[in-house]
Structures are given as structure tokens and as C-alpha cells.
Image (tube, rainbow, N blue to C red):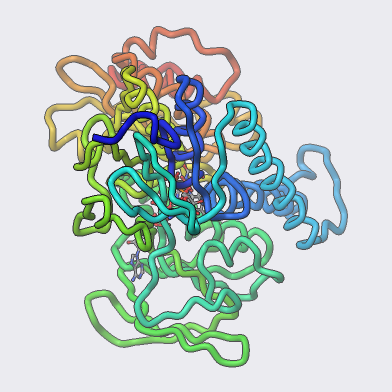
Length: 467
Ligand SMILES: Cc1cc2nc3c(=O)[nH]c(=O)nc-3n(C[C@H](O)[C@H](O)[C@H](O)COP(=O)(O)OP(=O)(O)OC[C@H]3O[C@@H](n4cnc5c(N)ncnc54)[C@H](O)[C@@H]3O)c2cc1C
Ligand SMILES: NC(=O)c1ccc[n+]([C@@H]2O[C@H](COP(=O)([O-])OP(=O)(O)OC[C@H]3O[C@@H](n4cnc5c(N)ncnc54)[C@H](O)[C@@H]3O)[C@@H](O)[C@H]2O)c1
């Protein structure tokens, strides 16, 4: 047993993404001497540097551009002429947002006295880590090393013509034809950005529907909406090769089940087929740790690994690869290390796709809920919501799924321009164990989009008013 005095830190966090930086701050708030190792130049991990934040900056800016350029604003009495794109300015504004937010984490580290050890960490023992030649010893070590892009065998990402999500956040010009490989969240969000700015976008998806993991009805409706927006969606299709020549790509695709091949000519190709955990170079063996078949570090209920004093959170562990899950786990693990009670309810983690409209879900899909037992479903379209109608923004619906016997809400799914914001209300209701009647009897402000959630809850008993 090591001498308590010989530890450099009570808690050493490896990785300063949403999981790691939050864990470090909470550990310090809990009175523990804490350091966080991060090899990037800036804090904030994938999310702040090359993920959530820059993608949302471009989604926001491209939405403004499309709205201004489309002439759609004229009906509201807003006449614009000759909206034009300054892509450089758009990228600069994105970079400013990223800089402000990553700099903000550095300030929070200072304020909370979290020491940032700049460099790459590798285990040399169960409580020792090498950080670029410096040996650091800690009583507790939290692995929060996140994830990186899954490569597609045989396809080389050059970040010029064939890009991953990081490259697609910084394309220097709008492609004429962008082929997106993978119809998941990244493909549809970044595909939306470039489509709005003028690209033709073709999405090649291996399975028979886009947006894996979402409610089937939501996936079907989303498919209709994206097609109407001009996306070409090639589902049940696999890419068998990408050849690059003279700044252009030829993408060869064929039916997933086999069949005749065809080629797509593109000037940009985005590979977005998922992400995989970062454990390479961590030297987990020196700590006595191993990974599962998917390369993830398995953890127990308290985020403890198989080795005492080593914990793991976020994308490097099994579960939804989402920033808010990582953050909540960061708080919980730091509380558990301090001897407090840190819990994350993994059954109630909202997922949001920030396209237009947004697509959001929490809890069980209708298919999953049916497998578990009898359910009642209430649905309400935004076409019946007064605020959505006033805004001329009626695409989508809210679906509330409740247990037939107890009326307890087990899932909520929303397609709407404000779905990402509305889903928080559903998550909170579910966390408090609400029934659909509880939501139906809660007074919602008028006129707001949130009234659609109340009406969907009322529809569970067939008594919605505005439909
Ligand atoms: C384009 C894109 C958009 C996204 N948008 C969203 C979104 O809108 N909402 C959402 O919830 N999620 C989004 N995500 C997913 C989100 O970014 C991740 O789920 C989240 O960042 C995971 O947090 P984490 O702390 O587990 O790991 P990460 O954010 O990946 O951070 C891990 C950090 O550890 C560092 N690191 C790794 N190994 C070492 C080592 N050995 N030594 C030192 N440092 C190391 C890495 O440099 C990295 O900075 C998006 C992802 C991408 C790619
Ligand atoms: N808004 C958000 O919360 C947000 C945004 C971006 C990313 N993320 C996270 O980042 C992670 C990675 O995103 P992603 O979009 O890369 O992954 P994803 O898992 O969401 O989607 C990948 C898609 O690629 C398809 N696919 C896999 N192999 C293929 C192949 N060979 N050819 C064609 N299609 C193939 C899959 O069927 C799936 O539909 C996700 O887990 C997501 O949670 C979240």
C-alpha cells in the first residue's frame, strides 16, 4: 500500500473533454488535490474543439444564410436582396466561439485550482502515469480519453477531398457535390451545413434507414423531411471504394445485399460511420486493465474499473457517445471518489440531432417500449400548435409513450425546430416519474411550442384539444 504522502494528487484525470474537465472541476470542488492531463493545445476535448461547438456554430450560421438567401423571409415583410456567402467570415466566427469556450475552461481550471498537465498520459503502474517524461502518482485516476473517428477500411482520409468530421468543419470552399458515408448524426448535421450553403449532398447509408437508434416513426418522418430539403439518401447501400484524382473523388457504391455497382463523382467525401474509444498509447496493461471486444473500458455502477482507484467515464466506456452523458458521469465519478453519492440514470439521456427541424428523443422508442409490455401512445402534430402555426414552422410532431397500466411516461420523441430545447422538459418529467396525466395537467404557457408536449400527453387518453 502506497504512503498517502507520496501521492502527487488525490485525483488525476486523463483527458479534458466534457467528461474529464467536469470531473476535474467537481473533484477540486470536493476538496481533492486535482490535476488533468490533456495533450491538445486547448481544453474541452472533442466537443469544444472539433465536435458539438464548431458544428453548432456552422449549423446556426448556415441556417441564417439559407433563410436569408431563400427569399422565405419576404412573406414576413423582411425583404433582402442578394444575400451572399462569406465562408471565411463564417469559419472565423466559429473559431471565435470555440476559442471563447475552450479559454473559458482554462479559466475555470484556474478558479478551481485544477492543475493542467499538458502532454500525453500513459500508465506505468496502477497509480502512476507518465506525462511526456514526468512521472505522476495519484490516489485516484479517472480515464476520460474520449473517442476518435472510426476509419473506413480502404478509404484514406486526406482532409482535402476525403474528410472526417474535423475536416468537414473547415472546408475552404463549398463543394459542388458532397458524398457523405454514414447517415448518422454527424452525416446529417454536417451534410445539412454544406447543403444549406449550396452543395448537392448524397448520403450513403449501409442499413435501410438513417439515424440509427431513433424511434422508427421519427426516422421515417426525418427521411421524408431530408429528402424534401434536397438530400439524396441512398440507404441499404455500401461504399466499396473511393478513388481520388486531381482533387476529385469517384465513390463506388453497391447495394448492401450485393448487386450492380455504380459510381458517384464528388469533390468532397465525408466519412462519418461512427467513433471508437481512445485507448491506444494509454498502456492500460501496466495498470492491469484491459478493454472489451469494442475497445471500451468496462465500468461498474460507480464508474469504477476492474482496478481499485482507477475510474473511467464518457466516450471511452460503453454507452451513448454524448457530451452531456460524459459531463454527468464526470460529476458522479468525482462525487463517488469523494465518498459522496454520484449516480447517472442512463435510461433517461436525451439525444438531439441539430438539423432543421431538430430531432430529439429520450427514454424508450415505441419499438423498445412494445417489447417491454403494453403501452399507450399520444401524438400531436405541430400543425395544431398555435405558436408553430404563427411562426409558419409547423413541421414535425411530439410523441409521448406511456406504460398502459401505470401511465408512467417511458419515452418522448420530438421533431420540431425547438425539439432540442423541448426534450429537456420531457427528460425532467420522466426523471421525476411523471405520468402522461401529470404532463397533461401541468399548465404550459401559451403560445409556446411546449404546449404540443402537453397536447401529446393529453392524446395518450385520446383527449387532445387542438386536433
Ligand atoms: C462533429 C461532432 C459533433 C458532435 N456534436 C455533439 C453534440 O452536439 N452533442 C453531444 O452531446 N455530443 C456531440 N458530439 C459527441 C461529443 O463530442 C462526445 O460525446 C464528447 O466529446 C465525449 O466527451 P469525453 O470527455 O468522453 O471525450 P472527448 O471530448 O473526446 O475528450 C477526450 C480528451 O482526452 C484527450 N486525450 C485522449 N487520450 C489522451 C492521453 N493519453 N493523454 C492526454 N490526453 C488524452 C483528447 O485529446 C481529448 O481532448 C459530437 C462529436 C463530433 C465529432
Ligand atoms: N447532436 C449530437 O448529439 C451529435 C452530433 C454529432 C456526433 N455525435 C456523436 O458522435 C458519434 C459519431 O457520430 P456518427 O454520425 O459518425 O455515427 P453514428 O453512429 O451516429 O452513425 C453512423 C452511421 O453510419 C452507418 N454506417 C456504418 N458503417 C457504414 C459503412 N461502411 N457504409 C455506410 N454507412 C455506414 C451506420 O449504419 C450509421 O447510420 C455518435 O455516437 C453521436 O452520438 C452526436
